[in-house]
Structures are given as C-alpha cells and as structure tokens.
Length: 114
Length: 111
Image (cartoon, rainbow over all chains, first blue to last red; front, side, top):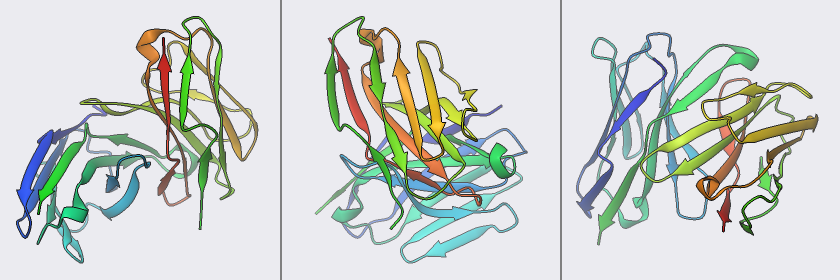
C-alpha cells in the first residue's frame, strides 16, 4: 500500500531530447508527490513537487504530469542537458504535521549524452 | 542555507563491530530520518524520529537502533555490523510542510 513503483531503472537520452520518468501508486491517502534529484556523492534534493488537485506543474524545463484517476505521475525533462545526468526519485507523502512521511520510488539513473 | 551534516563520508568497519553514524541538522526540524540506499532498491526507511527521545521503526529496522538525545542530532547505531549492512546511509530532516533535506550520505563498507 505504501509502495511507489518507478520506471525505467535507467534512461539514456541525447542532448536536447525529452526525458520521461514514470511512477505509479496505490494508496489514495497520498497527497503530495515530490521528485528528488541526486548527483553522485550528494544526497537527494527536492526538484519539483505537485499536489493531486492539479494535473500539471511546470518549473523551467521540468514538468510533472499527474493523473489522479490512473494513480500515475511522471516527470518530463525538456531539452535535456548533460548537466541533468543524475538519479531521479519520485516520492509520495501522506500524514500531517510530525506524522507526515515520505515513501520513495526505486530511482531512475538518467544519462544525457552530449 | 539549511544543512544536514553527516559526520563521515566513508567508513570501513569489521564484521561484529558496533558502528555509530551521526547526523546533525541546523533547521530546528522536529522530524529526522535514516534511510539506506542500495542500487535498484531506492531509499528505504530504517528509523525516524519526530521528537527528542522519540523513535519509530521504518521499513527495515532489523539490525539497527537509533538515538535522539538532542533535537538537532540523530544517530544510527549498528549494534553488530554485518556484511549485508554495506550500503549508503542517508540522513534527512523534514520541514513542517514536508520538504525533506538530505545529508550527503555515509558510504559504509563492512568487511
């Protein structure tokens, strides 16, 4: 019930292409869906997040698409750059205040070729 | 800039040793977390704490314990290290709005 399933495990994209990472969940109690970006040797850092009352959120080249009925959400990276090469984790959160928790997908290693 | 600091970047320990991983945050966050990260398995929650001296088991607590004596410090303890605990360990704290800030991780090798 607490799982978030992420695919693909790895992704190779040419510079300028579109990178798409998909996630699916089962628990309808999830109410916050962030994406984290992790560079080698660093901890994950919040990239972009969405709440289920909207279907899309865009920040620069990064867009989250959210399909509440299908219980799926995805990250789109437009005009992918070599500097975007990193591991990306989707996540889902539930609870309130001190009880709020986050569960992560298994991660996608993105490589953008120059 | 907010920060979560993990005391060691790399550790090599022997099987059976008691291992302490330390984490300090400077954001006055109530919630702190310990995850381990393994290829293909993502981030798995070991323990979390929502207040001083309070702790809750996560998804994979076996073989681990934690200590939170002060609000800013959350320690992960491996009572008797085993080779299957070789991993990257990540500490995090979360804001009241649910944004997590992670440390840079400790890569532990148990030989």
